[in-house]
Each structure stands twice: as structure tokens, then as C-alpha cells.
Image (cartoon, rainbow, N blue to C red; front, side, top):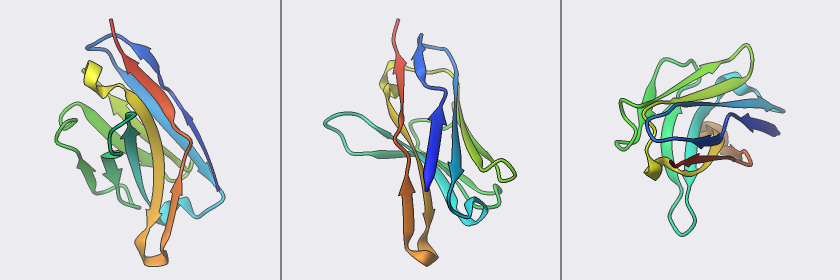
Length: 117
């Protein structure tokens, strides 16, 4: 199982970034995909999730209306479009694949997002 996450970086408040996570080594199209974020000293937070077909999405209250998760099963890729970024969005963003019925749960290495002027 492998994830290649990209798109992180330094952005000013109010700016935008688009994260990508390309997955391989498992049947991507049957997994729920999520983006989590991790700040040192804090619990890992699930930011957004999308079901296997891409028809159902969920968001943390802190990002609703600003972030959009999407997926392309033909490319084994999940995206996170982040708009109106705030300093409190600064974190390492990690890609996650989960299929509860199989008891499988895979994690990417993460990509750093820093929102600062």
C-alpha cells in the first residue's frame, strides 16, 4: 500500500491550496477516503470524508463551506480543495483509506500546510 500526497505548502491567510493523494496497492474504489490533520500536542482530527462512490461527503464543522473533498476512482486519487485558509488550518494533512467491513485502515505520510502572513 502506498500513498503519494502533494499540494501542501506555505500560503497566506485567505489563500487556497489543493491537496492530492494518489493511492496504490489496494482496491481504491471500494474504500472510504478521508483527510485528517495533525497538530503537535493535539488529537488527530478528521477534516473531510467521502464514500467509495463519491456521492456522500462529510466535513468537520471547522472547515464546512471552505473545504471540498472529491475523488477520481479512475486515477486512484482523492483531493482536498481548501479555500479561505486560516492560520488555525496549519497542520500536517494525512490521507486515510478505510474499509470497516474488512477491518482495513491505511495512512499516508502527510503533507505540511502552513497558513501564515
